[in-house]
Image (cartoon, one colour):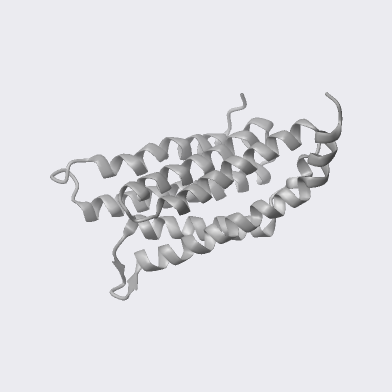
Length: 194
C-alpha cells in the first residue's frame, strides 16, 4: 500500500466520519445541540475539503495510485452515508431520500467494479451530471447539519432540503445515465455462456 500525503488526506477523511456522527451522541451538558450542529458541520466541511485536496495533490505531485483510486470514492461514500444516516436519525432528512442516494451509490459502485473487471471501466467514468449531483449533495449536507439561521436571514434547513432534493433527482438521473452507457455490455455479457 503506497503512503503519501494524498492517501494520508483520504485516510483523514475516513477518520473524520465517526466524528461527524459522534458529536451528536455527546451529552448536552458537554456540548449543547447548537454546538453539536456547528461541530458536525465544520468536521464535514473539513472532510469535504480533503476530498478535493487529495485528488489535486495526487495529480499535481504525480502520486496517483490504484489504491488511492480505490480508497477515495470509498471514503466519499462513507462520508455521505454516515452524514445522511445521522440526519435521518435527527429527523432532518427523510429516509426515502437517504435510501435513494445511498442505494444509488452502492449500485453504481457495483456497476463500476464489474465494468473494471471486464476491462470497460472508462465506459462509466464520472460524468458532469455526477459532478453536479456531488456538488449539490456536499452543499446540502453541511446546511442540514448546521440546522440554524445563517447570517440572520438564511434558513439552512430549508436550503439544505431543497439542495438534497435536487441531489436526489440528479442521483436517479445519473444512475440511469450510467446504466444506459453500460447496457450494451450488460446485454452482451448476460447473453454469453459462462
